[in-house]
Length: 261
Image (cartoon, rainbow, N blue to C red; front, side, top):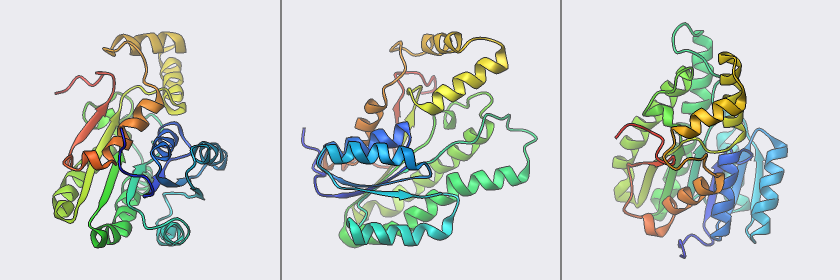
């Protein structure tokens, strides 16, 4: 299936990690040129190699989302060296496991800046160009905890849920401009983040990582963790010409894990 995005320019944040990297590679397989951003230079190098292997252009950018002052300069570099951003994929890191009560105000502020304000500011930077061209895709990856709160991930549950309200509101504001805005929710997709969370849970509960994985897997109707490529393919479809009538939606890529309707 030709997704109709060959030659378009995508900017993918979190591209040095499992989900963001899989998204960048999925877009490259469809012929998009991809600016890849992350704080991890090693992860960026790995993803750059995979993108180039599919014949697409990759522009790696070391980018700390907490620094809002560098957004304009980095986007300008993408526009100059690759092209105007037509597909924006927002993938942010998550805070460490915590309860929601009793957290320091500075921690709330810091994570809100890197996980929420950064996404809003970056999207605002590329929206005028999308509007001028009459075409754009804004896709934000959050967490299943935003719709079915995950115990011990209080800050993540709260902050990511705020992006759902923002995304839905934005979809209504820019739909007539040919721009779609959607959220994608991962379930238990096998990434370094999930490995770390499984290890943290095992330590809290005095059990083994294998037992934690078995317990998690038992709650997934498909009976396994997801492959990052499956997640990347779903995002690539939302970026496609064929998904032009999907906007304001929350798409779950979770193997049926999330229990809410």
